[in-house]
Amino acid sequence: MMQFFRQLTGKLNSNIFAGLLGPSTPQQMAFLRELQREMKQTNCMETPLNELKVTVFDIETTGFYPDKGDQIISIGAIKMKGPQIKEQETFYSLVQSDLPLSNEVSSLTNIQASELRTAPPAPEVLMNFFKFVKSDILVAHHSKHEQSFMQKTTWDVWRTKFNHRIIDTTFLIRLSDLSMKAASLEDLCYECGIEIENRHHALGDAIMTAKIWSYYLQLAQKKKFQYLQEVYEYLARND
Image 1 (cartoon, rainbow, N blue to C red):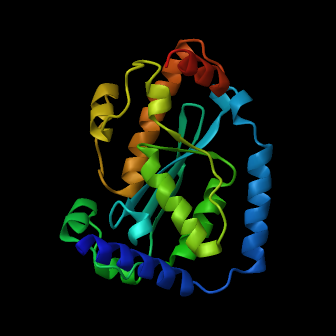
Image 2: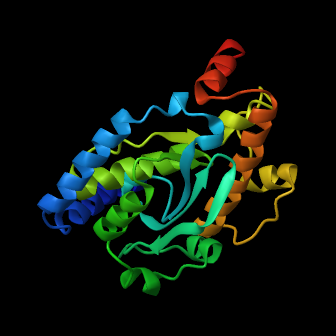
C-alpha cells in the first residue's frame, strides 16, 4: 500500500511540476533544435584525447527515483579540454523545489528546504546549464543517476528528449582494471591521490570527478590510446 501511494505521489508531482512550467518560448525551442544539430555533427570518437572537450557534472537530488517524483535540487559542472581542467569555467545552481527535503538529504548536501523554495526554477536552470555545456560530451560518476534525472527533467520541462552523450568515469578507469564495475568517488580519489573537498556539493563532486577523469585520461594516453574509438574497441575486445 505504501509503495502504491509513493508511485501515485510521484505521478502527481510529475504532472504538477510539468503543468506549472508554462509554455516553452520559440527562442528556447530554437536553441534546443540547434544544439541537437550540433551534437549530431560532433564526432567525439575521432577527436584526439588531448583535444576532447567535455563538461564534467554532478547533481544532487531529493531521492533516487525521478519517475516517482524525486527532483534535482542542484547542478554543478566544470569544463575540460583533454586532461586540462578549466578551473575558471564552472557552473552551479540550486533548483527550485517545493518537495519535502529529508533530514538525511539536507544533512548530506548542506542544502536547506528554505533555499530551494527561492531558488531559480528548473526551466531557467536547465536552459542555463545547456548554454554552458553546449555540444560537449558530458562526464559523470555513476552516470545512470544523472542520466535518468536529466532525461526526466528535460521531458517534463520541454517535452523533448535529453540527447547529450554521457560517459561514466568507469569507462576510462577500466583501462587500469578491466574488472572494475563500480567504485565510490572517495575510493577513486584515494586511488588517484586527490584531496576530498566539498563532498556531496554538486560543484565540489564535479571538480573531484574532473580530476579523476584527468588522471585516467593521462593514463590512456600513456598506454598509447589516441581516440575514444580506440578505447571502446579495446574494452569491447576484453569484455
